[in-house]
Image 1 (cartoon, rainbow, N blue to C red):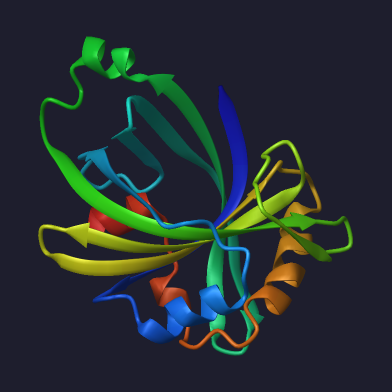
Image 2 (cartoon, rainbow, N blue to C red):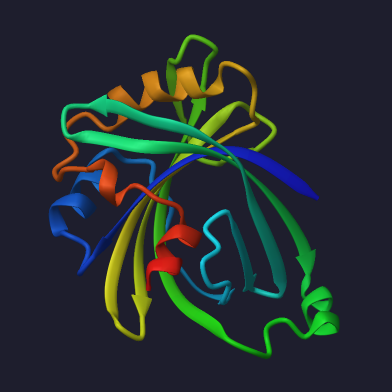
Length: 198
Protein backbone atom coordinates (compact mmCIF):
# COMPACT_ATOMS: atom_id res chain seq x y z
CA UNK A 1 0.00 0.00 0.00
CA UNK A 2 1.33 3.47 -0.85
CA UNK A 3 0.43 6.94 0.40
CA UNK A 4 1.49 10.27 -1.15
CA UNK A 5 1.71 13.22 1.23
CA UNK A 6 2.73 16.87 1.33
CA UNK A 7 4.98 17.45 4.34
CA UNK A 8 6.88 20.05 6.34
CA UNK A 9 9.06 19.34 9.38
CA UNK A 10 11.37 21.22 11.72
CA UNK A 11 13.96 19.37 13.84
CA UNK A 12 15.79 20.81 16.86
CA UNK A 13 18.55 19.73 19.24
CA UNK A 14 17.91 19.67 22.96
CA UNK A 15 14.86 18.90 25.10
CA UNK A 16 11.35 19.87 24.04
CA UNK A 17 10.58 23.38 25.39
CA UNK A 18 7.74 23.37 27.90
CA UNK A 19 6.17 26.38 26.16
CA UNK A 20 5.83 24.37 22.93
CA UNK A 21 4.20 21.44 24.72
CA UNK A 22 1.78 23.77 26.52
CA UNK A 23 0.92 25.52 23.24
CA UNK A 24 -0.10 22.25 21.58
CA UNK A 25 -2.08 21.03 24.57
CA UNK A 26 -3.88 24.37 24.96
CA UNK A 27 -5.53 23.82 21.58
CA UNK A 28 -7.31 20.69 22.84
CA UNK A 29 -8.17 17.59 20.81
CA UNK A 30 -4.64 16.17 20.94
CA UNK A 31 -4.04 12.44 20.86
CA UNK A 32 -2.75 10.62 23.91
CA UNK A 33 1.07 10.44 23.89
CA UNK A 34 2.41 7.36 22.11
CA UNK A 35 5.94 6.00 22.30
CA UNK A 36 7.78 3.80 19.84
CA UNK A 37 11.21 2.90 18.58
CA UNK A 38 12.12 3.27 14.90
CA UNK A 39 15.15 1.53 13.41
CA UNK A 40 16.38 3.51 10.38
CA UNK A 41 18.61 1.78 7.88
CA UNK A 42 21.85 3.75 7.56
CA UNK A 43 22.04 5.28 4.08
CA UNK A 44 25.11 7.57 4.03
CA UNK A 45 24.54 10.75 2.03
CA UNK A 46 20.96 9.84 1.06
CA UNK A 47 18.46 12.59 1.90
CA UNK A 48 15.57 11.66 -0.39
CA UNK A 49 14.77 8.20 0.99
CA UNK A 50 14.23 6.63 4.39
CA UNK A 51 13.81 2.96 5.25
CA UNK A 52 12.69 2.12 8.75
CA UNK A 53 11.43 -0.79 10.78
CA UNK A 54 8.61 -0.05 13.22
CA UNK A 55 6.19 -2.20 15.20
CA UNK A 56 6.35 -5.28 12.99
CA UNK A 57 6.40 -3.51 9.64
CA UNK A 58 8.78 -1.81 7.23
CA UNK A 59 8.20 1.67 5.80
CA UNK A 60 10.04 2.80 2.67
CA UNK A 61 9.61 6.52 2.05
CA UNK A 62 10.87 8.36 -1.00
CA UNK A 63 10.82 12.07 -1.79
CA UNK A 64 9.03 12.80 -5.07
CA UNK A 65 9.57 16.57 -5.19
CA UNK A 66 10.87 19.59 -3.28
CA UNK A 67 8.07 22.16 -3.33
CA UNK A 68 10.16 25.11 -2.17
CA UNK A 69 10.60 27.25 0.92
CA UNK A 70 7.53 29.07 2.17
CA UNK A 71 7.03 31.87 4.69
CA UNK A 72 3.99 30.75 6.68
CA UNK A 73 3.89 33.44 9.35
CA UNK A 74 6.35 35.83 11.01
CA UNK A 75 9.37 33.75 12.13
CA UNK A 76 7.90 30.57 10.63
CA UNK A 77 9.43 29.41 7.37
CA UNK A 78 9.96 25.92 6.06
CA UNK A 79 10.47 23.65 3.08
CA UNK A 80 7.51 21.70 1.70
CA UNK A 81 8.14 18.32 0.10
CA UNK A 82 6.06 15.63 -1.57
CA UNK A 83 6.74 12.09 -0.28
CA UNK A 84 5.43 8.64 -1.07
CA UNK A 85 5.44 5.86 1.54
CA UNK A 86 5.15 2.13 0.96
CA UNK A 87 4.41 -0.13 3.92
CA UNK A 88 5.26 -3.84 4.14
CA UNK A 89 5.15 -6.47 6.86
CA UNK A 90 8.35 -7.30 8.71
CA UNK A 91 8.84 -10.53 6.72
CA UNK A 92 10.17 -8.40 3.83
CA UNK A 93 12.97 -7.02 6.02
CA UNK A 94 13.72 -10.48 7.41
CA UNK A 95 14.08 -11.93 3.91
CA UNK A 96 16.30 -9.08 2.74
CA UNK A 97 18.31 -9.01 5.97
CA UNK A 98 18.60 -5.25 5.60
CA UNK A 99 18.21 -4.42 9.30
CA UNK A 100 21.02 -6.74 10.40
CA UNK A 101 23.71 -4.16 9.58
CA UNK A 102 24.10 -0.50 10.48
CA UNK A 103 20.93 1.10 11.81
CA UNK A 104 20.13 4.24 13.77
CA UNK A 105 17.71 3.57 16.62
CA UNK A 106 15.41 6.54 17.24
CA UNK A 107 13.07 6.61 20.23
CA UNK A 108 10.00 8.79 19.71
CA UNK A 109 7.18 10.00 21.93
CA UNK A 110 4.57 12.05 20.09
CA UNK A 111 1.23 13.77 20.34
CA UNK A 112 -0.83 14.82 17.34
CA UNK A 113 -3.69 17.12 16.41
CA UNK A 114 -5.79 16.41 13.31
CA UNK A 115 -7.54 18.76 10.89
CA UNK A 116 -9.83 18.39 7.92
CA UNK A 117 -8.86 20.82 5.13
CA UNK A 118 -11.42 22.49 2.86
CA UNK A 119 -10.63 23.44 -0.74
CA UNK A 120 -10.41 27.11 0.31
CA UNK A 121 -7.90 26.46 3.11
CA UNK A 122 -10.35 26.48 6.02
CA UNK A 123 -9.79 23.86 8.70
CA UNK A 124 -11.99 21.83 10.98
CA UNK A 125 -10.69 19.85 13.96
CA UNK A 126 -11.23 16.11 13.96
CA UNK A 127 -10.36 13.52 16.60
CA UNK A 128 -9.11 10.93 14.09
CA UNK A 129 -7.05 11.17 10.92
CA UNK A 130 -8.44 9.40 7.89
CA UNK A 131 -5.90 9.62 5.01
CA UNK A 132 -8.73 9.23 2.48
CA UNK A 133 -10.24 12.53 3.69
CA UNK A 134 -8.50 15.77 2.76
CA UNK A 135 -6.67 16.96 5.83
CA UNK A 136 -3.45 17.07 7.79
CA UNK A 137 -1.85 16.19 11.09
CA UNK A 138 0.26 18.42 13.32
CA UNK A 139 2.76 16.24 15.20
CA UNK A 140 4.98 17.17 18.13
CA UNK A 141 7.67 14.56 18.86
CA UNK A 142 10.28 14.07 21.58
CA UNK A 143 13.24 12.25 20.02
CA UNK A 144 15.84 10.17 21.87
CA UNK A 145 19.11 9.16 20.28
CA UNK A 146 22.30 7.80 21.82
CA UNK A 147 23.69 11.31 21.52
CA UNK A 148 20.93 13.05 23.47
CA UNK A 149 17.49 14.66 23.22
CA UNK A 150 15.89 16.34 20.22
CA UNK A 151 12.40 17.37 19.19
CA UNK A 152 10.39 17.88 16.04
CA UNK A 153 7.27 19.64 14.79
CA UNK A 154 5.87 17.95 11.69
CA UNK A 155 3.00 18.51 9.28
CA UNK A 156 1.70 15.76 6.99
CA UNK A 157 -1.18 16.39 4.56
CA UNK A 158 -3.06 13.98 2.27
CA UNK A 159 -4.46 12.98 -0.12
CA UNK A 160 -2.28 14.94 -2.52
CA UNK A 161 -3.95 17.11 -5.18
CA UNK A 162 -2.95 20.19 -7.23
CA UNK A 163 -4.32 22.68 -4.65
CA UNK A 164 -3.26 20.89 -1.49
CA UNK A 165 -0.05 22.84 -0.85
CA UNK A 166 -1.63 26.27 -1.31
CA UNK A 167 -4.54 25.33 0.96
CA UNK A 168 -2.19 23.82 3.54
CA UNK A 169 0.03 26.92 3.69
CA UNK A 170 -3.03 29.12 4.16
CA UNK A 171 -4.30 26.87 6.94
CA UNK A 172 -0.94 26.69 8.73
CA UNK A 173 -0.84 30.47 8.99
CA UNK A 174 -3.86 30.20 11.28
CA UNK A 175 -3.04 26.90 13.00
CA UNK A 176 0.49 27.98 13.99
CA UNK A 177 -0.59 31.44 15.19
CA UNK A 178 1.08 32.14 18.52
CA UNK A 179 3.61 29.32 18.23
CA UNK A 180 6.04 30.12 21.06
CA UNK A 181 9.39 29.57 19.32
CA UNK A 182 10.88 30.50 15.95
CA UNK A 183 10.63 27.88 13.20
CA UNK A 184 13.47 28.95 10.87
CA UNK A 185 14.11 27.58 7.39
CA UNK A 186 17.53 26.19 8.39
CA UNK A 187 15.81 23.80 10.86
CA UNK A 188 13.24 22.67 8.27
CA UNK A 189 14.15 19.25 6.87
CA UNK A 190 12.99 15.66 6.58
CA UNK A 191 14.03 12.84 8.90
CA UNK A 192 16.36 11.38 6.21
CA UNK A 193 18.06 14.76 5.74
CA UNK A 194 18.42 15.17 9.50
CA UNK A 195 19.79 11.66 10.02
CA UNK A 196 22.29 12.21 7.20
CA UNK A 197 23.76 15.08 9.24
CA UNK A 198 24.37 12.94 12.31
